[in-house]
Length: 412
Image (tube, rainbow, N blue to C red; front, side, top):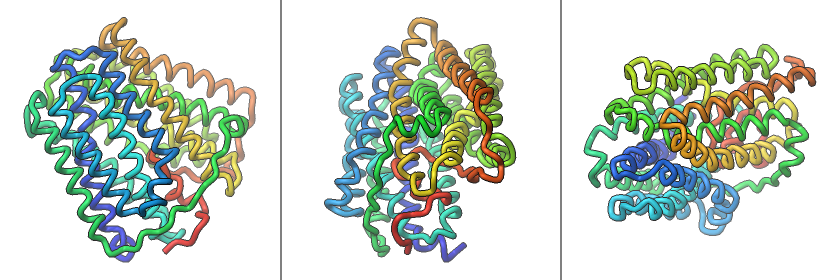
């Protein structure tokens, strides 16, 4: 294990600091927006803007990296993201924050692209699964811990924005000083959306659905919790528990999906997601302990459906098409995540703050119906022909770290 981790220590340290700096920023913006009296629509637009920037950078970020190299690109993206974080405190205006969120989303996508393509070039195929597991722990663990940084200062002040900016800036140091040689980006061709849908309608609809749900969750759950009267400490714990629930349920769910019709596991996950949305709706504004307990189930199901859809897609594509197919699936997820906060905000505006759970539950119901119709009309892939489940972090080139994918270039 030591021989695997030592060459990537600088990259993992950088991503940990980055997650600490950016992991609580979206939550902070939702909480601060409520304090400033921003409307649900304005806050929803801010959260949508992040995913718009993220999706745009997924398409064009590789050109920047190819032109200036990994380290310069990383430093540039991180510096701009740090400046954007601090600017939130200087200009407290919803539409200025929309622009800042687009910038932040684009920079984070570029940083993910640098880190993940670099990791891909550092490891052999046999160690790819280990690296993916370590990367997930650092990424999601750092994001979960970051939520607790909200408790260090008053979200109505400027200190937390400055803290975010400092952590993002410091994340440049280990990467800038690393002695590891940065690899060349491996170009990949994108499959068309029509081709992808013909291969896996369930995968495409699932990615869009969970994008809608997760985009609304990340963007609006903190706002809803504040409006229910929960303190900032409970909001921070809520977001941490959602993430940790998602981490905890990845492996048991994946284990089950490798041993039966994967669509059955997806259907059960959808049903539990619907039940958790109903539970959150019923308990919202009530005892915080019950609300938090249900949020663990919600997080577990909302985080696991995309990897299940990715695995379902991989069951149906050839080895040579997996990277291009997964890249398009990720863009579909991003489109859903960009639309979700706006639709969720409209639901909150017209149905009350608990309307967020109505919106997410309705999306999950539609997806469950679609899954059941697909199961009725199409036979399953035999279990012996299924690819194995792998946890997937939605990021620009995470498929390059997927052990199921044979890279196009040599690994270090």
